[in-house]
Length: 163
Image 1 (cartoon, helix red, strand yellow):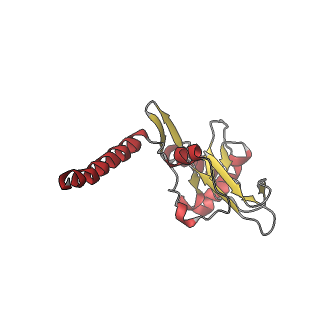
Image 2 (cartoon, helix red, strand yellow):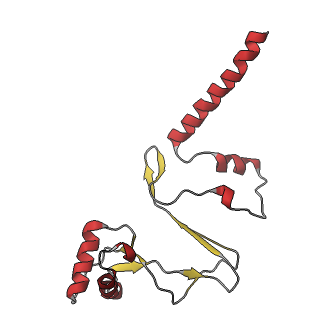
């Protein structure tokens, strides 16, 4: 999933900023440069189809040289840096979700801390608010439900004992 949020028009534009995050594709091509072949072989074995950062490579200089030919022949796809107009902010969240028989399962990406973000807009529809508060993971939803029932039982027991 790729979520892009902007304070501007919402049209992120690619600029000439150094790209360091890439991901392999399923294209095939016989690379000519030895450095490119070594780089692509290492990426294929270690990372597979998942995104990776050039800074994580053993020799970053050789990796930068090898990635150029791989990108030119579409063996590796760059994650471009998106920008807005001057003075506007852009936030981008990427994560991987597996669609499992028992529901969606988020396997990559950083946790989102809502306390760090303030919005001038609010959701007023009660149904949407309850949907947003519910868990996408069915196991977590069941645990929360059981905790809520247990808490309600604890609160009800002292009232029964007093009467």
